[in-house]
Image (cartoon, rainbow, N blue to C red; front, side, top):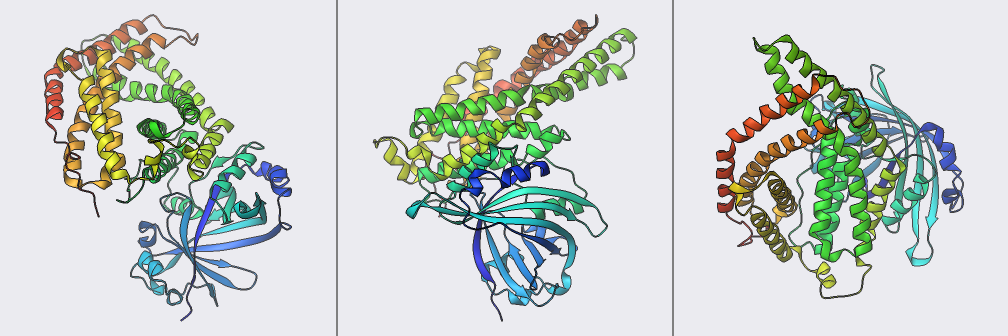
Length: 534
């Protein structure tokens, strides 16, 4: 039995426009560092799975690639926690048919699960023209060797449906993963590029399922019990970046408003993480990070605000008046006019959001953030009592940070029953930061008490969220025609109806909201007696 070759593939994918490939190929960043000429070949790779897609469920891929000399079978795992590395097992085949008996590695076999060749069927095939060149960055012991692949072609189903592929793969052959991001930044300065988090296999499966780009929530974060503080920082920041990038495509197409929402959630989580570990981040780095997060959040914010106004605040009022009798045709017309004006503002806000996500600044931010993590940029500071804690286990620090966030939330909510709207908004922000901190560290503790605490926290946060939506609606209605658009006479009356409708709802739920606050105050702190998972 031949054993498959095993390695860990570490790569960074960048989506490009076909018209820019020639510019990028000729870039001094490549030609001036090439260790040999570029080679070009055509790759035909067929991906296999069971009819019920068991491999896809396991986040495993099995492909057979036709080469000039024969065939190569490859098994790949999903990207690891760092988002760059993934398991890869290869072996030569005598024909185009998969042969699972050639796989002897236990990790690969566990990934595939119970499976036989007879259960497999071709799902899709990628036809790619690939140009490959190797470059060397740096010199001496710190040099990094990177293989650059310029891929252009398509992923095609057996029925002829296809999706185009145009991307640059930067694969680390030796050296530091930070070099991938450094090179990516150089290339992104020459032509519009986007961080591509979807593999060709993922795009093929989506095409086979008839799925368009979809939004994605943050995946549950897992920290090893013995991870250091700086290891936790790296893991948390990477998770936020992965969440952010996973929602780019759907935001750019505008097919699902949830994409913008999830990008904003990712940014809030990222900013919360940076603030949580603020004592360990040098001030210039902190200011750059927060500045870029604020810029992007500010570009996405209006689109999300108008989405919420249209779907959660205006829609129920509009539907109620359309159904009701005896309110008069004029009121319904006024509300419809307000809805049309709000939709126009929403569409313009989406233009701004898409421009930001598609901008060179956005790509440079993600690549710069990736380089910062891989280089452990926070180490660039004088040694101090605080900085040396970066190398200590994060478990003890997690207790301190959670307690600190909890106390801040309690202080923000003192005298809750009499707090004005602005103060309650600040409480909501404090609770949100606390919730993110809990989600970052929850894998370090017994899950059952964490879930109970999160339930109490989420209930309070969600209720305060409606108060914020109403306050935001009031602001948006005042800003509705600040862009110079024309206001119809009945819009102010319709705006008053919408605000009054929801203000009454807020008043009716006040007693329940106060009760939720007291439930949160009584919630047991699961970190008071930490029980790290071992």
